[in-house]
Amino acid sequence: MSDKGKAVEIPREQQVYATVLYWGMLIGMGLLIVTFILYVFGVLKPFIPVTELPKLWGMKVKKFVEVARVPTGWNWVYYLGKGDFLNYIGIAILAGLQVLGFIILFPFYVAKRDVPFTIIVLAEIVVLLLAISGVIHLAE
Image (cartoon, rainbow, N blue to C red; front, side):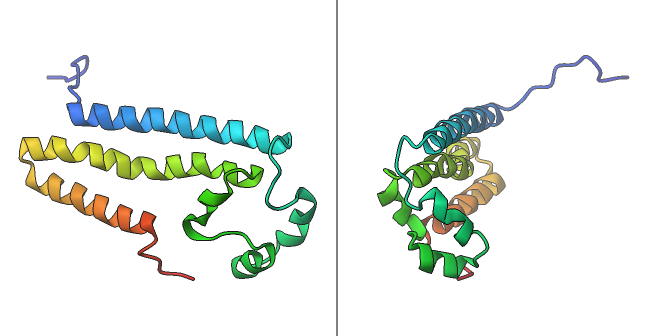
């Protein structure tokens, strides 16, 4: 007997998770495009002048941060008025989608009393939030 033509039922939590990732991706990518256009057309003055970029491109990260005096960690938030930092909003949204998705999945698995998935999702949330916060950083 063949299963061809049978509709596959997708669990509600997977539909919600996929919807969050889809719309979050569209918003994040849209913001990346808009903020890049603002940067390219010079609507906002950049933190690093475009003419200085070729001098900085070949540097190791530590040297680049030192010479260009760019903020590290979450300090980029204070520079959103600069054209070259504004695009970080889209990047942050895209990077945060995974943890948002897990946070949304958590109550579904709790309600189903699905202990293994509840534990996995909770562990993912904790690890991702620690990483996002900057508490966990393995390399300098």
